[in-house]
Length: 270
Length: 270
DNA sequence: TTCGTGTCAATCATAAATGATCATATTCAA
DNA sequence: TTGAATATGATCATTTATGATTGACACGAA
Image 1 (spheres, helix red, strand yellow):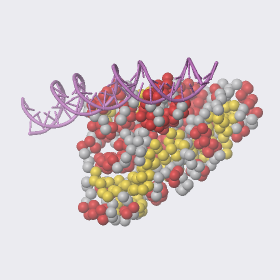
Image 2: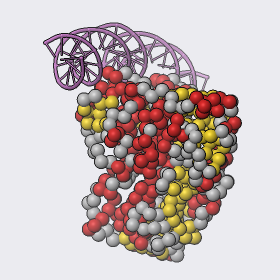
Image 3: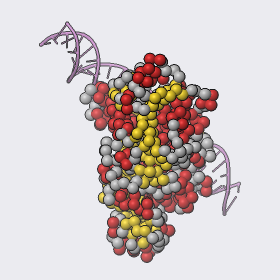
Image 4: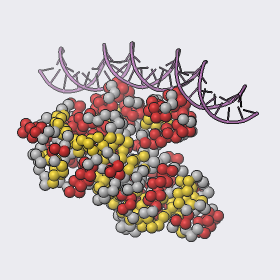
């Protein structure tokens, strides 16, 4: 990891939340705290951010409009710690150079932080994720064509003759509204359509769902549980749900929320 | 592998990622690190990229490129007034609800400011334009699928089976490196390829070029002058060029730079 | 108060990048 | 073909970046 890369990551992190800790950055960049301190000091004199005790903060706190994640803000804030931990496990599944697919969603969006230091080939139908990766990662970013839906920040196309058909990923990472014995569920038919197109383009399906999603139902089944290779969730999962998942032959990864993932304050996402 | 070939590879690599290491390039080009260092040093003084410890980075960080309305490079800011005025005239050609195509470029990018208040259907191959429109306009935004090239902030796809084929616009707005009797000229073959795909998808072609572009030559012809319906330029155009344009049956619009276009820094849009 | 925790600056050893140098390989012109 | 000019790769000394350690300092809790 080189200086410029780290600083790029720091910059993106500090634009995402108004404040970020030394430890957070150290984990994100896999560098030592001493190095991060030096980086922050240097960026401080460059005027790129403000150095504060324990970390760094953005120069312009109210930067709402420029932020990628605006559409999700509300739902993003809910279980942010868990989502972060889940996202971290998801990124850990990836090796350098892998071709992966990221479906849009608040949990998958959290992956961008941990992807910043990586170099992969990433296709995503999320405009927000693409935006973030283009600005803050070394990865190749590929997007499908189509119309951009502001609300979900997704790129959707009614057509099938698309770039998506020319991309094949090792894994596809996706969220869901709910998970039950019948599979992963979504609420919006339009989103389902787009997701299913992507699902066929990947070897393995990885489902990122925090534990509150188990038992939650929706009317539309996105894909059966058998199609899913791995589910990543947090330690709030009930034994019954755990059994259900394992009975379906799905690998289960429990992400531990550690202190570093904890949001420092409620404003951290805004 | 020859010097030029290596440097071409380096340049393209640095356009796809914000930062590349010496080792990466050495592996890519099968040259020694010493040679790559020399290449980078030479390209640095040529201004083609920035030499940083451990590798090289693009001159224009995508950070600034794509963020909140800050356009591409400071050096382009010289003609910013003219480009704004030209862009304003271009937007004036559009009626509410029109389907239009915006090709990526610094001049077309200026259109976004005047488009903010409009409600149109816009297809663009510029990631930066799409980003801005999604955040700051009511228009429908459609993008082609493909890989995102960071330096030009463009979406390029080697495939022809694309959403672009399902979109038909009333007008396509595009810039050019130069304009001569043979037509509009571009410098990068990759860009040409993408542009030509779009050109076939529009009724009318509108060329946005400030007056300094007349007479400026490049090796590659993008499209013949006859294909162009309208050229918008500023009042610096020479009579000879004006005649050339009108002889080709192209409508010519001279944009007047007025006070409100003047002296406003691009950042003020954010 | 005293202890514990967390942050920070200073220091040092190690690892990595760099620049200078030289030998070899390649290109080009005569 | 030869010979000069240039490009390239390897080597090594120097510089720089990094990570670990230590002690100082501030803050809060017991």
